[in-house]
Image 1: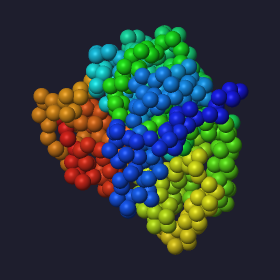
Image 2: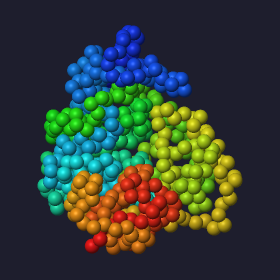
Image 3: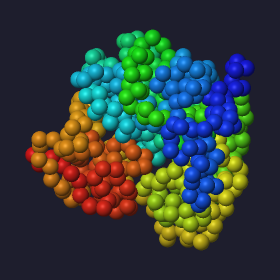
Image 4: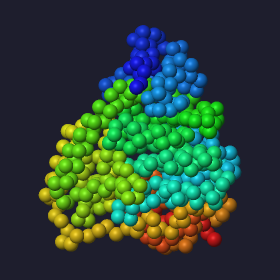
Length: 492
């Protein structure tokens, strides 16, 4: 049971009280609570800007909290099951980088799930740490990642006993999670850290139909994007800590460097409100969303054109019901085409890949939303004829791309990333890049997960995969493979 204090919103209350006080602002920001706005912007921003304040008496200081922010963070820790919680205004990106900076010194080695978000790699660059990449379990039928198997972790710990710990992504962008308790046990027996990027799982543990949380499994540090599946404003996130192994003072110093010295009070206030919502009525709110999800799945069961892919329990996976991985069972539409057709009907998805469209439900999703989605799919099924022959979109399975279960250490250097290394680089047509070593990270976006890391040799399968992604118009962060038709490689 949570304490009655969970009914309050200490930070949001202080913001609202100051807004009502009629105080005259002789401090930043310059818009003075929205006093001077273009009339066209007034309706959109007036109310939120009245809460856009700074570190004045009563509103506390994110980087040295002693009052309202400290109380709000303590309530968040109690709500989500942590010993200590930090509010983040730079999204999970700031949290991931702080976890790494507080756990690794220059030259240290960290085990990292290969399909980690790019912020993890950027954190390793800034820390000067090396990564040993662990290939997750992949479902060949769906292409969905199922996280790191305990046997892979054991192998990595035997090969690299000096590793500081493991940073794992759970759940995946597609909503696949696995039980982290066996990983936590293996690591803690060797005094290693379990760091979890739980960006898409802030709702975990609040309903029996969603997976349990990483904190419940024993993770030392967990990052959650409170804005992704919950109700905080975009960029609002939390970093949760527990246990004696994480260096908490280093975490605080890292966050002071990685987060703005002028944090957004509207974002901070929204984190306080989101915590209250989850503590007071999280299960009930999730039940409402789950009813909408059940309505959609009932439609899927009633027809044959559209398929929903999900986690495979035989591979240790459990699917988050708030993530729907939708595809055209006939192969008539690839994922990108299906996304475009849905957008024509006012349905905007989270992302598309060559096979699937990812639909992200959240606490704000209603049955009206899923009814509109069903109507769009019914119309598409009527107007888009099945292809003459059933076809499957042929793309190589990721797990056949030549990756070892446990990689050699990968050094990620931020200076080389910014300015280029001493090695010469050339651009090679994507269809002919097999055999070369990648000069840069190659990151299809979304989901922002690197396909290749600097120095990794490109296999024929990867070259083919990149070629197909480019043909389909996939976006890339960094070097744009689709627009140029090339890959930056080392001239060896």
